Image (cartoon, rainbow, N blue to C red):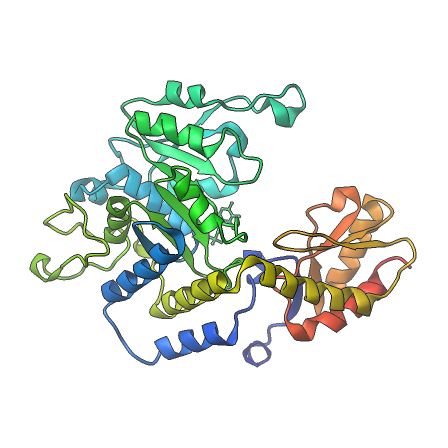
Length: 391
Ligand SMILES: *Cc1c(COP(=O)(O)O)cnc(C)c1O
């Protein structure tokens, strides 16, 4: 095992597909595609065109690109909204884009929106998130977005969560009335698989997904999908374009009216380049994710949690419950936040270290997330929980 050879301890990842904990694991078919891709060379433009066909089939988008993650897709999406198909504007990024403002609801601000600023964009916050402060019921309204639009606005950023306000349809309507594109961060909004299409159907011009989360692709992969002209712009800002203009021909997957005749310089996305192995792995993983279907996937993940729960057994003072939904979780309710924090620390101190999901620690709840668990982890994890939780 490579990690043993490197002297790197393995962990049991019951926290989810967190980047810090190396994402998830990949099916044999995805691993095989990556290994095979590494044995031959191709033109990366042809490979991204094939990926675009697969992404278009899965999402309903006009075109798509494989990036090095949802964060890279956000960066490239922002660059596409700012520069369009203007090669000079691409070359100027990240400095002084003519249009750089990305209007977003203040309640949707998050640490990943930095990708917009890396590309040269500015975040313009609107709305007062009263419903989060407990002071009222309101959040940003479509009219707040419309009022913030100006000549230097490049687009709208909308961060997808089941509770996001205002609804994407309403934001897209006011953005499109002003001729502005809507970029959606849906990095972790899968499953349900229907979300591959839902945001584009609701009016998004570009949508970003992580490849290394529920899709089950390589940890360092992501998807940017949407309007062909914007994806074409992103492609031109991602690819290595070190060739004479005359040798560059846009494949039909990306061909957009107004594409620059003269190639831009290496773009702002040059440091977001996926390898052929990541692209091959992601395309295979995406096909498998769609083919499996939500109900069989939920049943498969639930079966993992049942093995963990059964190996753990009944523990006094611990209420165990497997939640319904597309990603079932094993919730372990302890008598209070302090007990949960102590148990979480004991699990992390074990060798191998056990990482559970601590998002609800304040409520006294530890969650076992099934996505990143390997089959061989399940029984040892149940036994580790039995030892570490108060009994
Ligand atoms: C995980 C996540 C990202 C980053 O995705 P990567 O694929 O790791 O780059 C961005 N936004 C949100 C909301 C996320 O949950």
